[in-house]
View (cartoon, rainbow, N blue to C red):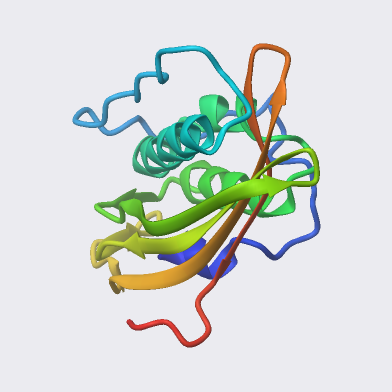
Length: 173
């Protein structure tokens, strides 16, 4: 939810400094998502599979602080992606961590747009807890929904997220 509030805004900094690594250890129960199998084609079905994977990778990154895979499948100019990457880096660099706040995409529409595929739909974020470094009481993150917009393109042999935004205005908490 923290990330839902942040996504889609930001300076487009290009993500965290890749030379620095978060200091917190990954959550032992989190598992790196498996990449979708099959041929990558510029179709709505293939795009939907990639977005499901991208969200799973984003959930993994927020649960563990390991953002490298998310960074590798997000275009460097994707401002919303960079906001997420920066948030993950900052939480874990400071010794904090996030628990439970998982995203899913529901009721979406995929259509060709700007040489890629644009997907719009409802992002659901589950309740979670944000633990800041040195604090024993977490900050509660409420379950919420947002209108998500994703734009992706095929680069080389795979999809890459090129734009992402989440609008929480008018959504239910």
